[in-house]
Length: 333
Ligand code: DGY
Image (cartoon, rainbow, N blue to C red; front, side, top):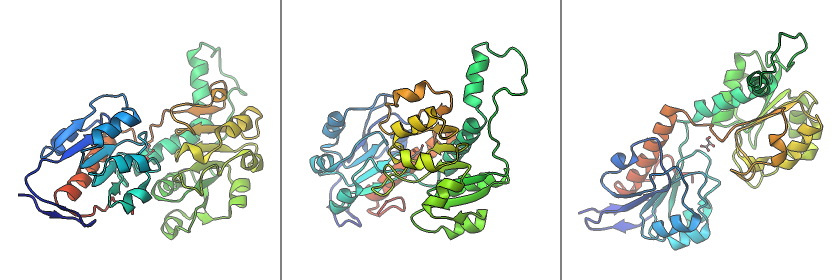
């Protein structure tokens, strides 16, 4: 007999085997971690359509979903049995979490475990874009390297330069900490001050205008919100240094991608590195033809141990709600 009074106030009685939907294959034995439940696992690399996922979730108690699954009001209304949605990502802008909260559905994410791996990709993009690593690799592979040249592939060093961090959360602070190894001067812009990061890295909070004009390298690590959407457009790229290197590992819609492509094409900024896109997986066509941009397929957290830890965290959150009736620390509200 299962009796579960959870924090949202619902009560479950009886030895009912609860159903959990996992929307896409994850590199972790999630069925094993959820073996007390019926797991409807889309054990495939292909995403389910919005309608198919919704249909599978109509009678589900929990959903483990990906950042590419849209979980909106209609979805939540149609799946009235859901008690917990565990997003296999730290960002959760794909879920109408405010509505879910109104409906008593706990929305969880995977913070902390992916901080360092995502920050590493951010730092890697800063280096790759600044030092033209992607372009140089293509050049070599295409057989164009016919001898050392003093003026060949000149880029911009990170060492001693100013790094601007947009969004000083866990990942932003980790990138800033890595930048200390390159003797970088760190400035940041955020909705509020992060005194811990300031103390740890010597980062200085600056207004947005100063952030744009003073940074040699910019890394976007902010979440997507109404306030951050399209924060970087034509105007902002115009204000940056012509030598600036711009990296986005936060969320694509923070940047107007067409404006970034124009700024790169017109050499208004030096280079960019992107792991996220405005309309994933679609990428602005113009970017494919530009040498001064490094394009990654959203692999911020794609590390073997990290992805396993994310799977474990999602499973733990689900179990904590369904079995113990508790609100997990990963619940986002
Ligand atoms: C996330 O988990 O939100 C990030 O996009 C990782 O790449």
